[in-house]
Length: 521
Image (cartoon, rainbow, N blue to C red; front, side):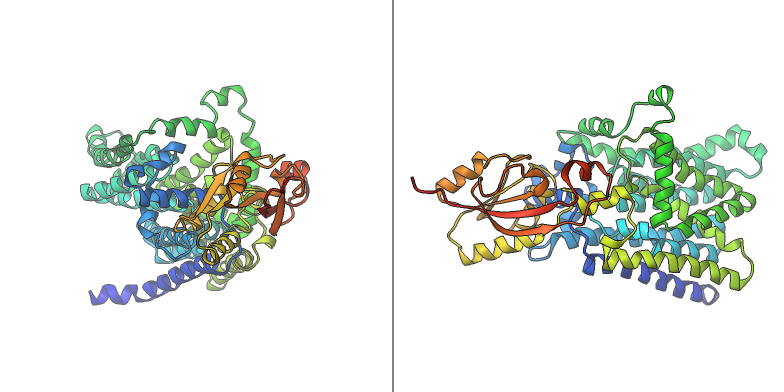
């Protein structure tokens, strides 16, 4: 024990420092960062609140074809008086922390190198791409976490021929399948870990050996899909497949038009890593791949398959393609990039490589934390998270105003109309106002030309009535609709040339109106 402690003392110390840096960067993002609530964040948090309040709705996410595990965990963490967005984002910080620990463990299992494992963990901790999504209340960070641990336990199961590790891999697979549909890639690629059960190439054709290794995967799939089939208890299990078809092309697409959108999406992927990888990560990935293929072929083959096959497949079949749709592949790219430290033998060159990645990453991390509007986000992320109706600028401020108004006027019934029925508005407001029953949120549609009937009737009934809408959705003049501006919250300027900029103009603004009382005739 003393020998082990002595050999691992420095490694454990460095790992603790890396994990601390990982958590600190992400907590800084959610603590002082200026990123507003995003559409899916608002939806997931609101679902968790409803599921917590009403046990019969524990499968509510299935109504939109989404798996509910993230919301199941989140609903137990929500507490009155604490910002639900901070709690939701904090959950992703926790899963990101476990991902980082998993990257260290999987790297060491594969390469038996503390230096490689520490460097891979270091890359994950500082990488702006992982920092961005580990600090958002989205399911993608949780999916990545489960993916890493699936292959940690599967690799150990094959190398040590242990069915207990197979079972643990099965539980991890079940967690992934209950989190998001791309877990199917993990399920399909799992058998590749079987290569670690064979010695020489000739043994691959040994039928007894094949059967023996294949037996290890039985508990993995039995447990994983038994957990997944819990979702059949929900009334809308079939909608998972229906909604998946909304996001991907049919398999026949590869025969119809294989080039479109494949090459455009691949260019997007390269651009994403160039901007928030950042570019130094691409250099390390190439170095790590060369070293891995030359010196650790089986391990490199596994990691390249786990990362590149999903990326190429998504590039071919995805109708909607943004950075977070490949996030579940990124940890495996990071691990093989960790091998780049072995390509340079001299300590000075190794320090130079570490310093290059640290400087380029922290430059972007600093902007993500303190000035996200100036950060080099890819176009798809900037438009969605900052510029369009999907970005919830002003929602928290509006909720605070309404809460204070209700406290001053405790006997008044307050009705708040919002554009749309689902998404940033009204879910963003509802998640902050869940504990205030005197404030009712009512969705009234989009592209408003005249005062919606729901708000007109509320006003005429005597309720205090407000209206929250983005300027891009307000087609009538506020004064003609009987609206009095309470506050406005402008969003960053739109990216020139995007569809939204061409259609709606250079800038969107969230308007918070009070509906005036009807004039006496």
